[in-house]
View 1 (cartoon, rainbow, N blue to C red):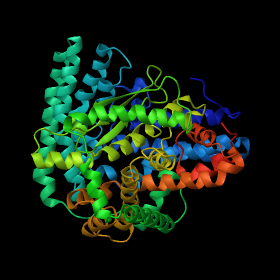
View 2 (tube, rainbow, N blue to C red; view 1 turned 90 degrees about the vertical axis):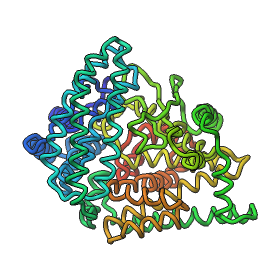
View 3 (cartoon, helix red, strand yellow; view 1 turned 90 degrees about the horizontal axis):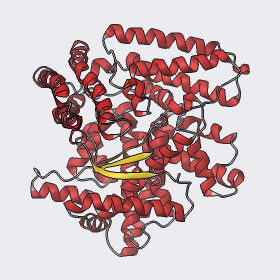
View 4 (cartoon, helix red, strand yellow; view 1 turned 180 degrees about the vertical axis):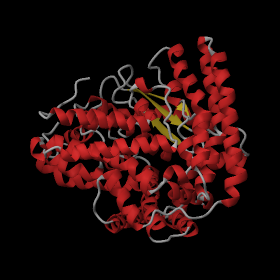
Length: 545
């Protein structure tokens, strides 16, 4: 792939070195981008390994700072900012948050084989090698975890780590079954058994030694929260400004929901009863999701919302067992460097047949028809899948091919939900807009809870009540959402990104793009996935797509 360079060779060299250095710490990130030279690698998370990485990052940041700004074009200056954030973000985690000393998820979450199982980038026998190499390193990685996780550890971190870890044995077994297609199951079994034993031992250690000593403390505090906004998204605005914007969006969505209820002559709770009872059967969930994939694709084309590359193809599959504790639906898109396939995999978590009838019904109610369509908009068209197809086709620099802002990616997908309703998707049924607003209220509340939990002493109980009253969640999902905010403060990204895109649309659509929505969206998606704090400055210098 040919990527733009600058007239300053030293800067081009630093760019490549920064990206290579990032992938030393996050090899699975490189694999997800489609760089299969990193297949089968797990990071060295020992103190000596991360100290070495920190020294290298500090050196690269000093070299970046020494490049004369006057020698770079505006685009390459922006790339320099991206490169600095690619280093400063993990340095924040390692130095300021001490994440490797506090959160077991760093170790358990690194052991994913999904990239090798789900994407047909090479024959099965070639993908078994990285699976074997990954499993061989699991005992070493978890020993490093035990050495660093001194404790006492935050209780929410432990709870989710145990949930993630409990799904790994079945994930490893899935890999062995996969290898059997090439008659290589024995090779995987030989490393699967010690890897699974290491996971079992690690989880027992967490359960027996760390859980009894667990503490409720998890908050970043105001100063580190403000720094988080900068290193992740290039945002320097005070978090209080972001809180006010989120509260205003929450109020707008609540008002619209009340308008709909009034027009339908029902209460808001009665609207949600209607929404939740219109759901598919367990057997219908995946076929219905595939129908919605085709429907939303046609909708994007018919309404000229964005260009859909002709090679676009997305299939629906059940969420892998090991990932079901964390996800109801997700997108596994092709990476920007993946030269073999443009196919997307839309994962939908099915009913667990081991659940009681009541639990199955509750799950299906959450996957009602309108919510499943809204989720498909978010994950597929014009959401994540379409976004990543444009990401692959963009002609940006190496830095822009590598940088993945959560607020840009999730913000675009969340914006897509509102866009689809604005343009009439599901207009024949008022529940389509109710579902979209319900998800918007959830994301607004996440932003408010994130700031509250980490900057102003909000308790988990207060956060739970906020999800119940403002996002209209039942007690159990409200508790889970509150807990998620303790270890994932960045779930502010949905609303933060959506509002930034809406602001950019109001600012640039008419004067720059003559009101042509497809041109605006194509240009926006052609930027890559930059930090949301850089969005306006990037759009100021573009030519319409």
